[in-house]
Amino acid sequence: MEIRTLRYFLAVAREENMTRAAETLHVSQPTLSKQIQSLEEELGKRLFIRHSFRIELTEEGRLLRERAEDLVSMADKIAGEFTALDDVTGGDVYLGLAESYQIRYLARVIKEFKEICPGLRCHVTSGDTEQVTEKLDKGILDFAVLAETPDTGKYNFLRFPEADVWGLVVPQDSPLAAKEAVSAEDLAGLPLFCSEQSWRRDLPGWCGEKMDALRLEGSFRLSYNASLFVREGLGVLLTLDRLIDTSPENGLVFRPLTPRLEERLYLIWRKRQVFTPIAERLLAALREGLKPSSEEEQA
Image (cartoon, rainbow, N blue to C red):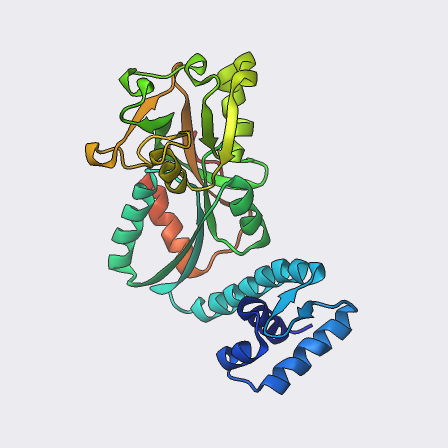
């Protein structure tokens, strides 16, 4: 199974049309069809269901798409790393980031670093802990930022300088907007939006036995999207401070939880990870820019 064939497969899966996929790949349709047929024969499974004007993935095809995306990303990253071995002033760095206003510290370090190494190219994906650590473990990412204590057996880390504060985003006319802080009792019976990860991990420890009285209306990976639901009156949002625009003209307010619930942010990378020269230099800049103490950085 060749990487080129997987690229062909992904193009067909994306376009859902053999002709359009052939055009994007700059190959003939017969050539592309033959490659897909050979791939199906090699795997012994049908990957596509053919309809009159489109094709769709089978269950086996969806599984292959998930695996192929990782394999192609890894192949591209390896090629980029070897290209960059002799270049200490440029190259690609891959980051997976949790949502936090503290990402500004990371952005600030990168901005200053690019003045020295203008050839740096950052490729950023966003996601929860499960998403970014999976890609980090596979070698698709160089660094990840987590909003939870990392596994020190697997990762080295730097801790960000501040703590994020948990709270509730509600419309300005909500009775909860008049409160200085919001308790678990205030949340009982309300339609709540929250990330699935935080609902399982953060809220039970804060609520204790009151967790049973809380109702998850829906889960969101991105707080911004959830805030649009809040503006339409569909529920209220449990999230971190300064992720959502709560200026007066936006119609939303943020109220912290009581007792106070905080979240620390960590930059992590795999133990014994071999970096490209540009990633190694960026890490040195991050060590200085995030200014961890000796207790906060684990080697």
